[in-house]
Image (cartoon, rainbow, N blue to C red; front, side, top):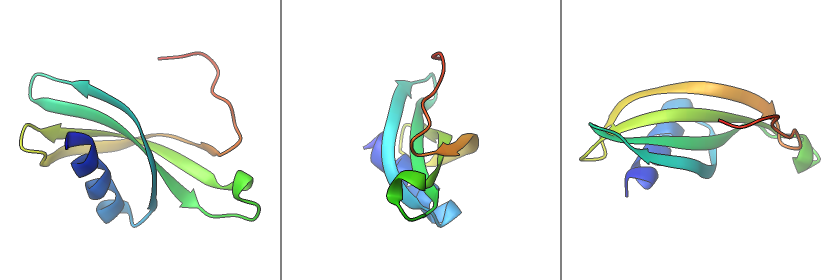
Length: 82
């Protein structure tokens, strides 16, 4: 439920299309959810520009903060890990 609420809220705030939930982590105050959206649709789809957002939601699923952490082409591989 926390992931769904986080994704819905990012989509509502940014006006972008939802792509996927890429992470979820329990925090002291609720949840930290990684949400990926399509920032720019291109042809072919493999050239789309995606963005990752880190979203904080409280225990009730209400947004308490969000920030864009990364912007990249759909086909771009990430070097290293978190």
